[in-house]
Amino acid sequence: MSIFKFKEFEVAQDRCAQKIGTDGVLLGAWASIDHDPQNILDIGTGTGVIALMQAQRFQNAQIEAIELDEDAYEQAATNFENSPWGDRLFCFHASFQEFYEEVDEQYDLIISNPPFFDSQSIKNDENIDIARSQARFDSALPFEELIYGVYQLLDDDGVFACIIPSDRESRFLEIATHFKLIPSRITHVKGTKDSVIKRSLIELRFRESEITTSQLIIETSRHQYTDDYTALVKDFYLKM
Image (cartoon, rainbow, N blue to C red; front, side, top):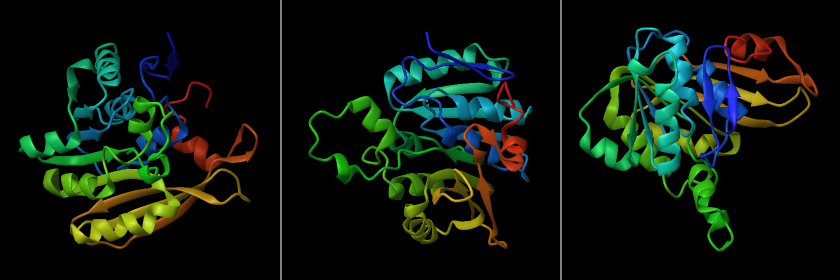
C-alpha cells in the first residue's frame, strides 16, 4: 500500500487516481490563516489530505468532505477514520452538484483543489484514464458550477479558498464576481525565482476588503526550499 506520512497523520493513496502533490499541501497550509473556521467543507477531497490538514490546524472545527470517485471516497473515509481526528471528519460520496442541491448547511470555510485542466484538451483522446481525468480535468466540475455551489453554501462571513492554474485566474475571477464573490487574498506560486508563475492560490469572500497579493517561490535550487515555503508547510512535512 502507498502511504504518505506527515508529522501528525498518514494518508493511504493507492486507490486514488490523483496522488498527493504540492498543490494540495500548499492549499491546505495556506488557506484561512486569519480566520478560525468552525465548519469546513472540502470539495473533491481525493485522498482526504486537505481535510486532514484542516483538522490538524483547526482543533475545534467540524470538517466535511465530498468525493465523486468511489475508490477515492472509500480511501478518504478510511484515512479519516485512521487519523487522530476521526470524530470530526466525515466524507460524502456524491458529486458537488448533488451535494449543494440537497444540503442547507452554511460553511465558514470552503476549500478545494478542483479539477482544473481544460476538458476540451482530452475530448477526443480514447486512451485517457477515466478516473485520473475526472480528478484532473474540469468536465466533472466546471468552474461555473464550483463557484455557484460555493455561492449557495458559503456563510456570509465565510471564506472560499482554492488553487488553480495562473493562466485561468482571470476567467475564474470573472465567474466569481458574477456570484458576488470578491478576492481578498491571492498568492502566485513559482517553482523557482526564474520560472514562470504556475499556480494561483485564491481566497474569495462576500464581504469586500482590500486584496492582499503576494508571491511564493518554492525552491532556490533542486530540493533546496525557500524560507517562505518551509515556514508554510513545516508543520506537516516530516523532513521540514
